[in-house]
Length: 256
Length: 256
Image (tube, rainbow over all chains, first blue to last red; front, side, top):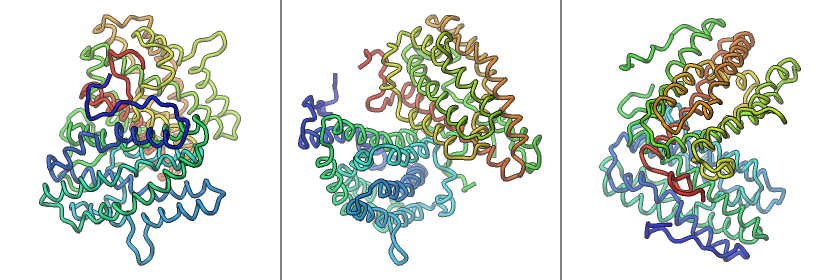
């Protein structure tokens, strides 16, 4: 039973080919991607105060900073040089280079702009334990599962551009402490994510050759939607519900 | 600043010996053990309905069922036979034997008694993603950190007996769907936990020989208190706050 009209009904077709797989993956995104999480409605709708936005940016830094580590593990899973070459640019996108800012640096422009101390952010002392467990689960997943599942777990990028567009316009409109300069991370991802997602989608459609392998691809995407959802649940509980766990960032306090 | 009179102030002494280490560990327990979590006050005080208690027992099964796997990893970290022999009984305590019920079976008596379908519980389909990430983080921790830290992460058992006594009496008093027979897991742990905790405490006091090693022991205990706290935060958010994430157990629905 599904009373919410925004949530499309589960496709009942068997996973007997690449197109059925893609339809199932898009259904998973439409029902489980964290764009549906109430915290995002609050964030994009201007309903949070600056301390709550700081908590979000601080915790999301833990996710951003683990992504190139995760991608290095993915690269390490492939004996095929072509796949390693293709995947390697993701590490570069996030880590940048000696003269080239990457995604992590761009994220720190956001936390700087929000007035968070950079050394405190980078220390990750104040992040929520649930954030830590979720982002580390992502690294363990790509290390311990099959290479096919490792690639499939990146497929949330299929759904990221719409979310990022909503975020950029919503946050610029609603918060006087947000300006275009500190939102540069998201603008850059608008072009990076579709390219990456396209490769990963083509890869799983070509390499998942049985219904069982296609089911594993779907499970990998569900896993990843959980990694994202858990982070927002934890933020909501701590900074909207007010139940900040011991040791975590408390808005308004100086960095400990 | 610490306005809560129940929370003792942090000891500022250096970790320059085993007794200073023990005092710090007991302070960590007094400030971070999940006995302090609001969900436990609701659970033990009779403030939850049966569906919420089901959700707690279902999710806690995921933790119970990973413990012997975690302990097998700990055993695998020691080249010293005596330590392996000592630690092995923990696997036996939880897994039991061909003619002997263990802790996992005793936990299933609780979920049976609460009316949960045993196959559904064992499938772990309905557990919260945060529970899964937290319990898996525990296994990864004992695999990836030093053997000393692996043992130190078990030290929450120092604080378990008081919590279990409060739980047994509180739940028997307040819930008509709880009876002594289905609470047998906790009664058994009243004798098991102190023995195990005593060994682990003696071990870390003897084997952490520098302030740096003692600090790692403390960090391991903090990590473990986070593993426990995250599980209750997730339960509280989903089943008290009402924000059940996609795919998780919904009280009142049949097992999907």
